[in-house]
Amino acid sequence: MGMQIAEGITLIEGVGANSNCYLFECAGRVNVLVDTGTEDNFLRIKEHVKRIDVIVNTHCHYDHVGGNLLVKKEFEAKLLAHEADAPYISSGDVEHTCSSMFGKVLSGVKVDIVLKEGDVVLGTTGLEVVYTPGHSRGGICLYERNRRILFSGDTLFAHGGVGRTDLAGGDFGALLASIKKISLLDVEMILPGHGDCVLSHGSEYIRDVLNSIG
Image 1 (cartoon, rainbow, N blue to C red):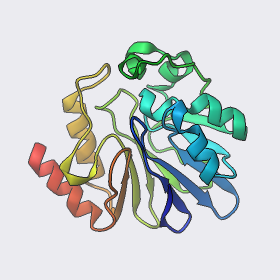
Image 2 (cartoon, rainbow, N blue to C red):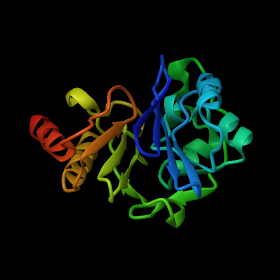
Image 3 (cartoon, helix red, strand yellow):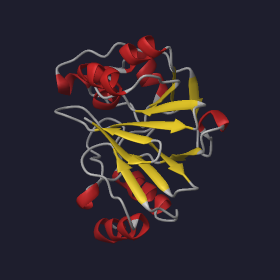
Image 4 (cartoon, helix red, strand yellow):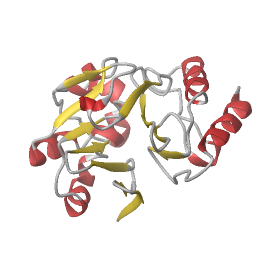
């Protein structure tokens, strides 16, 4: 079901193989969907979302991007992803999207805008791109500086979890460096790709996770 996490931010909680999806509404100007889940998640998105202008994939794995084709077509949305993962999303690369793990074949979907470190999504929403490889080559977090909200993808989870690094493009050293990077941000809320959200004291939580794995 859709749940309002903060003003203008709705969580569509991941069920089964699906990632969490977040609708970020920017003062009626731009609606950003962070990840789509799998194609099986499409009807749940349609139930809770009336408008999507932009889809941002936090990384290329099927449980986060499998619904790209359906969502992009339905809402005529632009698709954004980091430059290191965009080729895998556009081509439907089996190895790097891990689609075979889910018994699926991913339809390649063109990435319209390629992101890099420091970009701000569309230059209007205030969602800053923080490049956080390790779980995949092109993993990103999105940071809203004003309210200190971090969309952490599969870089970091609640309850001490971090992204696995044994899949194609995974690298524990890179993941550790990514968590060190986000530990320098001023974070209150952490909205991860799976599971519960961290609703307060996010910076302290990230430092605790870093200490436990570093």
